[in-house]
Image 1 (cartoon, rainbow, N blue to C red):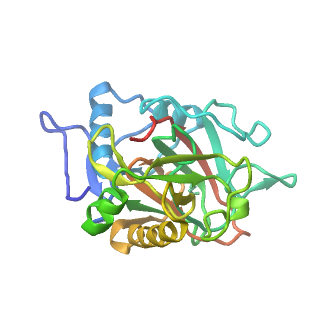
Image 2: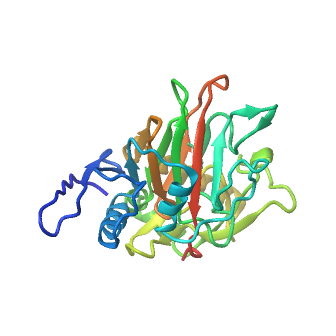
Amino acid sequence: MKGMVQTGPEAGQPPFGVMPLSDALGAEIIGLDLRERLSKSVFDAVLDTWHAHGVLLFRGQDLDETKQAAFGARFGDLGKVLNNHNGRSSTPGVMYISNVREDGQLVGALPDGEMFFHSDQCYVERPGMATMLYAMEVPSRGGDTLFANMYTAYETLPGRIRARIEGKLALNVYDYENNATTRGSEPREGVPSFAHPIVRTHPATGRRALYVNRLMTHHIVGMDRAESDALLDMIFDHQERPEFIYEHVWTPGDLLIWDNRCTLHARSNFDAAERRMMRRVAILGDKPY
Ligand code: SIN
């Protein structure tokens, strides 16, 4: 996901610029207004750029729910919204990530504070392949979203560690309240969970990527628990090495789309007294293999 790619209006080139966001991953797409429907050839070029960089940024966008959902639907079927916070969104597939309260009620999910690295919905059989977040209101400091490149994390693991995880599954659980992935604790009965390959193959690029994470991966299936804990802790530290990470400091009007199949993301802390209002669309994916 490295390298400077500059495209322009020459023959055979898409009509947008591509500026890498970091040495780790991510690229900014320059020159597209996402209120307008992109032609098939332009969208295909966007898709290729996304596959090459893992995260795309479009700055200065002016999107309502319908326009954001329509752009998301170009990537695939939109995921179901599990909590619409009293009908906050009137567009299927759209939800809010926010700490804002109206009449004492939260208007969005995942309201406050830091979040550890994770891949969205890794605790279900068919996790979302992509997540799109649009910044409406952001705090003056913090609330940044960090992305880590799981292709590079896999490729740079020592060979002896790669051999130990080859062909193995890990159980991912959704149990934030119980802090289930703190080593030594157990998930509560009935919480959503699913075992997926520790290393998955990206269906579009054919590349292999690490698919475990500190927030939701509980243990390696069929491995002694102490050995699994030690191995996972080592992998989590490796995945979060600074050279694999791009940290996005949001400005209202930014739209980011990330690929959950080859990246992890996290959120930095922010002042709970400041408003943060983001609009999210998730795109369905296939069962990891
Ligand atoms: C998420 O993990 O989907 C939320 C990320 C964020 O709020 O920056």
